[in-house]
Image (cartoon, rainbow, N blue to C red; front, side, top):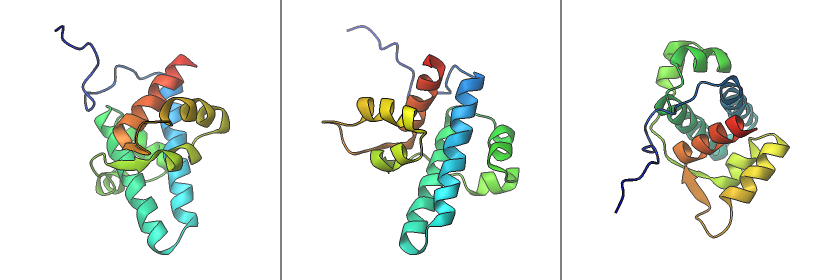
Length: 133
C-alpha cells in the first residue's frame, strides 16, 4: 500500500497566502464577536471554541504575532487563550463564515459525516478553500 501524500492533520500548512491569512483572521474575529454577544453556559462553550480555533491556527503554522494582531489582543493573551484543537459543531463553524464560504463549506462538510469535526480539520478546510478561491 503506498504511503499517503496527505499532510499530517497537525503538520503546519504549506501556505501563507494573503487569502488564507485573511480568511483565518475573519474566522477568529467572528468567533470573538459571537463569544462576546453570548452569556452564561453558551458563552463558556463559545469561549472554548475560540480557544480551540486559535490552537488550530497555531498548529497550522500561523504566527502568534499575526494571530494576536488579527484579533486585536496581546501575544500573552493569545498564548493564554490557546487550547489544543478539539471538536466543534460544523453548524457553529458555518455560522462564523461569510455566506458564500459557508455555502461551499456546507456542501463539503455536512452530510453523512459526523456533525462535529476537529477545529484543525475545519481550519484546514478554510485555508484550502481560501487558496482555491
